[in-house]
Length: 434
Image (cartoon, rainbow, N blue to C red; front, side):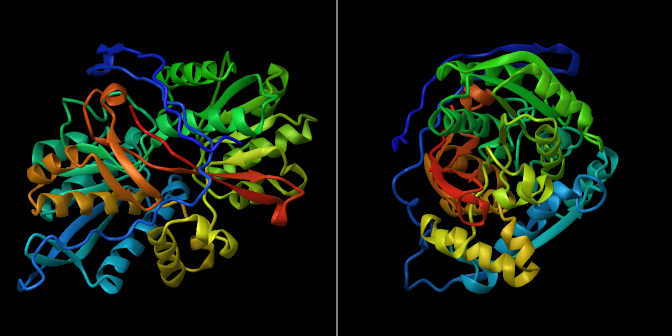
């Protein structure tokens, strides 16, 4: 497998979405390279910017977490809760606080449950503003569209744990919106690179995904990503309801398409069930599960008999793979284990805590907790530590606003019945968001 970084600008998509009030947004896909030959550089807390002899003030910094911890979307968001709060605990109790300018802050997590409901999410956003919270890490962009105006009008800097590329979330009309996640744009680019490197026989892909925020813009990106490697994304678009419980019809569509690979996101339970049904119907098509969940989670839902010829974009928390991760990644995993148990640690992805980590570094660079000053500092960071390794700012072509997105290394785990425990950690892929 290649070990180098390749980033190719292929196509710019421009769409006018007058019906929903969104402006034009373009997208240019980026090819992701094969895993690096060594582990990502260690990401540690940035050093203090104040002179060593200066006596520090102390303070408390409120940072909100607006996600869903009850009802159906909690299956996606509960890891964000664990990992965000573990990072807060790590900063407060392991690092001793976070220095911004001449003040050493303890972080106060203000957790709000959106209850998997748009109206409740909006009420939660209002409650954060009323509580004087100026910084928020938030759930997926397709949810946040229901309350984004509240944060923008209040001047709250808000960062999306995982954008699925819903038009209008980030852009000139929403200057306080950011993300420290590769999101769907970076993850699908990574997935096609894995197909090219690890599954060279795959020539056709069918897109199968639930209906949570998925749109034609993303589908167009996928077709362009595939074309870079001579892979055709079929015109069929399998979109199933997010509350589906019987996936036999979805699997039948996949099998009848004759595609070499089926690819999509959705909950681990859903994609595990789809994989199980596809195998039960006699197909050995490659399963490209574009989720930041470890291979073990997909295997758990698919079952042992169906767990083959598949991969996820999940990391490894196994002891033997720790040397491949950054120090900060391993440290936060251990903090999750300490606070929430082994199961929470094993399913670690780190989306919300990475957004918090980057946000804190932007504050440190600004030397301020004024959201406007932090916004400017984020836009001018250039490079930044992420829990996954070195990250870079970008996003102008993709989101229509410069340097509001962070591209960072993405992990890949391959399900292989011949490997230890039925899977292996393939490595990290460098990603940039054009």
